[in-house]
Image 1 (cartoon, rainbow, N blue to C red):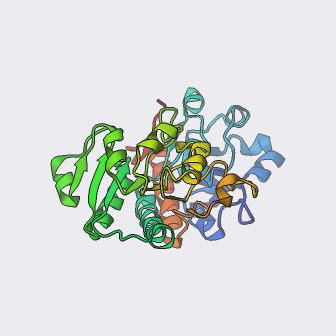
Image 2 (image 1 turned 180 degrees about the vertical axis):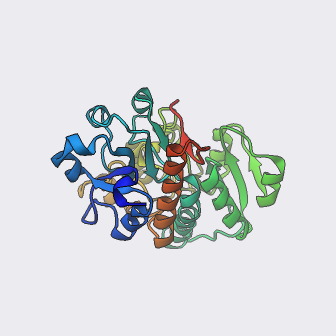
Image 3 (image 1 turned 120 degrees about the vertical axis):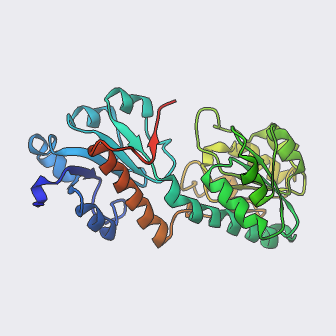
Length: 309
C-alpha cells in the first residue's frame, strides 16, 4: 500500500527530548502515515482530513478542545501507557472519539519496579527482611496481581483491597486475602503498595488518616500516580516517624522541585517514574497501542478501550 493511502496518525515529534523514539516511529510507519504536530500546524488544510488517530507518548501531544475541533476525521486516541489522567475522557467522548490504553504491556515492568522498591527500601532504609512479611496491595488489577505473583515467591502474606474482589481461584493461586475495608489492610501490612488508577475517587486516597492507621514500622510504596498520595501528609508522617519509610516511583509534580521537602528526608527512596522504562515495555506499549488504533479504524472489537466515568 502506498504511503499516502495509509491512515494518518498524529504524534508530537520524532526523537528529541519529548518526541516518539525513532524505533517506535518505524513501527508506526508500517501501519500509518506519521504526521508530526509541526507538520500538521504548517499545513493544516491538507493534513487535518488525513489524521484519523493520535498516538500519545509520555502524555504528549496535549489533547485539548482546539486540537479536537481541528481534526474532523479523528476516530481514536491511542495512549501509550495505562494511566489516562492526562486526558479529558468526557470531552474527547463528546467529539465521538474513542480512547484506548495499554494495560497489558506495562504490567510486568511496573510490578518489577514495585518489587525493586520494596526490596531496596527493606534493606537500605528499614533493614528488615521481605520474606514472610505482610504485603498489602491496594489495587488488584493487572499490575497488582503481577506484584502478588512475585511476592508469593518471597513467601509473603498477601492482603489486597480492590473495588471488585478477585475470583477465588485467582486468590488461591497467589495466596492473597481480600480486605473489604482498606483500613484493615493498612493496619496489618508491613509494606503497603499502591497500584490504582488516578481518578477523582482515588485522588489523595492516602492522607493523614490512612498513614496514621499504618504500622509505625511500615513502608509505603507508590507505583501508580503521585497524586494518589497527599504528599504534605506523607512528609509529616515520615518526619514524625508515623511510618518508617516510603519508596516512590511517582510524585506530583514530576519531577519534584529541587527544594521539595520529600527530597530532604533520609527515610525515602524516589525513582523518576521508571516503572515502564524498559526497552521491552516501551516497544510492547507501542505495539498494543497500534493494535488498539487499527481495531477502531477497521471497525473491529477494541482490545483496550477506556470509557469516561
